[in-house]
Image (cartoon, rainbow over all chains, first blue to last red; front, side, top):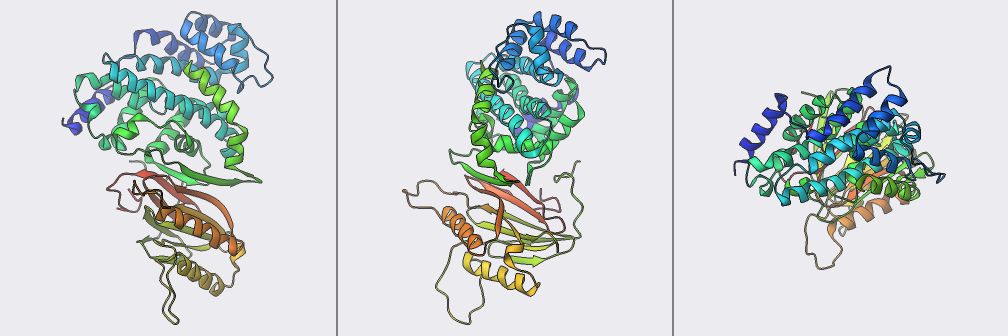
Length: 278
Length: 174
C-alpha cells in the first residue's frame, strides 16, 4: 500500500472541492445557510429543523441535557429548544448531522466501526471543549463546542474515501498527521462554510502546539483532545496511541485547579456527550 | 504556511537543550527541547522576565565533593537553578514553575516504577522544597513531547504526542 500516494489523491480531491456529502445532509446544510442569514428567524429555523427528524431529535436531546438544562425542566417542542440553545449551538448540531451521516457512508463494516469510534471521540472532545472554554480558557463555549464537533472532519472524510484504497486504514498512517489531515480538513471545512474563528482554532489543532497555560480557542480544542478519555482510533493507526497511559495535566486557574474544575463538571460533560452519541 | 506557534513574537536566539543540558537567561530567547522519560522544569520570574530550563534524565547520584554539578541528575540541575536564581538577585519563591515530560517510553516494566515516574515525583518535591509555585504540568502518558519556552513572555508551547522521529528542526520546532 502506497500510503503517501493514496493520501495525496484524497487531499487533491478535497482541495479541488470534489467533496460529496451524504444526500440526507441537505437540510443540515440549509440550516447552516439560514443561520448565516441576518434575517434568520426562530420560526423559519424551527420549520426547517422540524423537517429533518435526525436533527430535530438531536436538538431536543441536547436542549434537555444537563449542560443546557441544569434546572431539569424538560421541553418537547422544537421552537422552545431552538430558543434555549441559541443559533451558535444549532450550527454545531447541524454539523453533527452531517458528520453522523458521513460516519455511515463507508460500505465496509470495519470502516463504519472505525468511524463509529471516531464519533465517540468527537462527542467526548466537543463536550469537554465546551466546559474548558467556559471554566478554563474563557472562550465562547458555543464556538468551542462547534470546533469540537468538526475537529475530526478530515478523518471522517478519510474513512469515507478509504474504500477506494484497499489496505489504507490498516497501514501506518503517520503521514496523515500534520499536513495530510490539515489539507483535507481545511477543504472540507471550507465547503461547509465554517466561520473563520473555527478555522483558526483548527489550524492551532493541526499545528499541535498547546500553550501552557492554554488561552485561545485552538488551545481549548487541543486541551480537550488531550484530556478526552476516548482516544481517536486514527491516532492509533498513526502510531500516536497513548497505549492506555494517562497524561497527567494540571493547571492553576485563579484559585482553582484544572482537575477540580473537571471533577465538578463531569456530569455536565457526560450528559452532553451521551446526548450527542444517542 | 502558518507558523506552528500561534500568536508569538519571533525569538532572536534559540537555545536547543539536549538531555542533561541546562540554560538560564533572559531577552528574546526561546529554549527548545524534546522529551521522553526525561523531565524539564521551566522557571520564570514574571517581573524580571528571566528564567531557565533544565532537562534531566535521572533522579540523583552519590555526590563527590568539589565535582561540578551535572544537570543530567534532577537534584544537581535544581542546584544549578538555585545558583542562577541567587546570582540574579532573586529568590526561588518569586518564580513560577512548569513541569513537563516523564513519559513511560517502555512497556512491560514488570510493575517496577518507571524512570519517568521517578523523575516527575522528584521534580515536584524539589519545587515544593523551595516553595516555588507549580502553575502547570503536563507529564506522564506515553510519547514524546516537544517543548518551547519563550523567556520574554514566560509562555510555554507543547506538542504532544510527537512521532518516533520527532526532532527540533527549525525555529518553529517542526
